Image 1 (cartoon, rainbow, N blue to C red):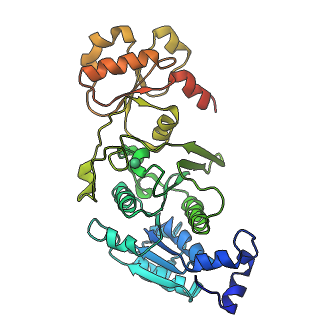
Image 2 (image 1 turned 180 degrees about the vertical axis):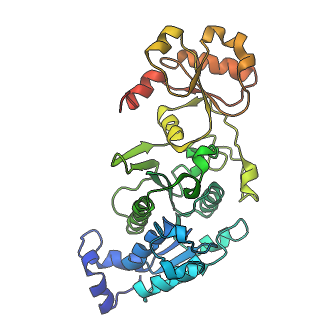
Image 3 (image 1 turned 90 degrees about the vertical axis):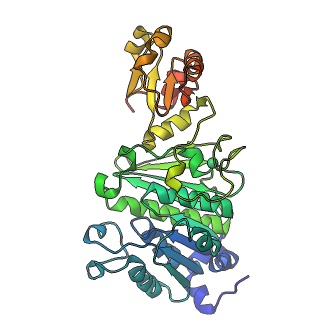
Amino acid sequence: MESLTSNEKLRYSRQIKLPEVGEKGQKKIKGSSVLIVGMGGLGTPAALYLASAGVGHIGIADFDSVQISNLHRQILYNEHDVSAKKVEKAVEKLRRVNSEIKLSVFSHGVSEENVKEIISGFDLVIDGSDNFKTRYLLNDACYFSQKPLVSAAISKYEGQLTLFQPRGGGCYRCVFPNPPSKAGNSSCEEEGVLGVLPGVMGLLQATEALKYILQIGNTLKNELLVFNALEMTFEKIKYCPHTDCILCGDSPDYSQLKKNIESCQPMGLDEEEISVDQFILWQKSGVQFRLLDVREEHEREQDFIENSDHIPLGRLEASLGSLEKHGILIVYCASGARSLAAVKLLREKGWGKALNLIGGIRRYRAEKPLNT
Ligand SMILES: [Zn+2]
């Protein structure tokens, strides 16, 4: 294990003081290596704090240049940096923050060709990217290389965070088997984002990384943390590894990293059911699906789940012509019995991605009451 110089003992003394860290923990941090992919709103605060905390080797990967519209959230850069390569400016600043750590720069970002080799040099990966292609790519590469991945995403006033741990946890494809719809897939550029939001989420990524390195506390394995800045709420949603996940499931479609990740979408859905937790997670994340209510008219008058179509079960077979066959179709009723019958009928008739909402609207309202 690494040893600490007297200068390091002084520098990190407030952190060493924590009984869970101590000199032993600080040596672990010194001996650790973290790769940060994307030096934008998430990556810059994460890098700054991990460098300050004494992570011995930090890799930064990004191909982009600094733009004036980045400055409200990408706090490592200033007005003089506009037009310069992000990684060059970032490494300059980080070196000034901590000259005793090793910094590696990957100025072409990550791609199918280089990702495996790049991540092989690090203990943990932080995903600070802003697009789904990179998220799926990092997820798959980390899965095959057995590296923990701290993943975060931001949009407008809301951020999400989780840890995908090698062995015994789900992966990004378990949570998001299909890329979110166009609405949920847009970037900060299209949707806008409150400047501090990526800061909060990037620091939470750094926190999760440090805890993982130190092996202290509870990690976000199999839990998605959702932060809403307008409501000032933190919410945790549990997710499960999916047995039919094309990457980490029982009979995966992948045995190695696929070229052209986008063309691998969308995946098949062999399971006929979806839990309320997973459903809420998809709703929040903009996963593209259609929703069908198969209850009677009088039940629908009482309450219904927003954005759902309505065809009572008794009329479903006769109305199939009006239902689009493409994409995921989630079916619900009061408690899940009628919708299961509907899903069986739909699958028989060629709707291969029809899913029954387990527990129906009753369980959904138990999780998400009206007017909250
Ligand atoms: Zn998976």
